Image (cartoon, rainbow, N blue to C red; front, side):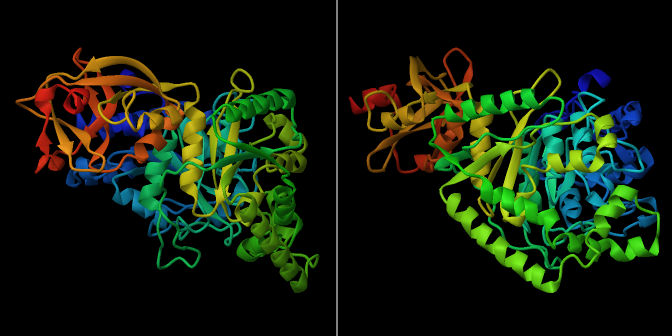
Length: 574
């Protein structure tokens, strides 16, 4: 069975295998347990997967229809500052541990969709770090190169996905914890708008800024999770209504106009990877603007150089005072920095007013586009972080700390590798509620250089009125072709009239069409703009191959003129 389960666990592939009965969730869970045991020395888990804890989740799947449960049997990992009923929550501090009786709100929604929370992952203690080494449960190793840091604070969550021990994993993000580990382990890190996902049942770092996030191998799988957990929680005072993610291309991409700072032993490799990433952005065919990122740096400075450090102490100070020595010295030092008298109440309001001005400037700057920056400007070995724990950690947040303070959504995605086994990633930012724009721009970036065939059977063919839409989306004509003899064509009563290609089980014919080639980066936006009852689906060609192409919903045939006998749209309008 080991050979049948891919190393990188994919939501799409596992669902296919489950529905085909080629694999069972129990077999997947046993493989996850085996992999976690094999990687025990990497310090990924605080509470690792175990069959006795997971059997009840497997048993309940018998009463759930997999066709109607989008995450049926899908294993996911949970950062150990997020509650899972019956599993201790430690926040990587043994003396802090408690066992919740109910799931955190996001976990509850995922379990309701059929997912299985396989265990609790390691983290920088109390989510105070971006390196993945600040834990009494051991330093989490990088998934690709063990000597390097994994990134934090959601270290174990990212590495669990990258090492094939979960399809996706929940993390949290206050200053970059849901993005830095994604970049260092070659993953997608999706950070929704603050409040879009409820944080009830999450140990707070800075409650007013905290987000629950997801790590996944593919953007579309992260978006499946978003679609299931997004939405207000009436019991969560930080929850707020944020629109669902609807794909929409931004009108512009923005990149920093001044040279950026890179750090660590691979600084020059990271610089080269960033330059290559900018070149790819410039080649996407979208307008690119070059902007001063000073306002983002100014906002980032507020997080740890301003009164917001007191919010951490407000949440955890009572525990630290009551349990001397329970936290790691570096963690306690960070928390206690918010306990002093360095900031008075007036300083707090001054910082709030300053931040409000920066939010306005950010919204104005990004009103027609998204900002792109490196997720990280470098990385470190775990040994280097031990030698310089504060400075190395501070560097990791250089391009992430501003995000939640400025009320931005973000997605971290892989780019070109900086070196062998050394992934490099970029992050796309937009104002809250505009996740659809960062998602679509990220798709374009990931699809750069790849194309897809498109079967065209109507007004988008050469010489017809909508050919220009094909050209505007970068498509080129390849050849004339025909469908398999399984289709009807109707003339839709629209203005102008257009054809509807409908697959039929009997009485079909082979119909003439054209095959075009379109950049994958443009394909999503093109498909999203097609009006009902038309859409994009799989069209079977005369040689038996299937390609994406224009199809029509069957209901549109009622009352429409059947023009199948003409053999294609050109002949019908001939």
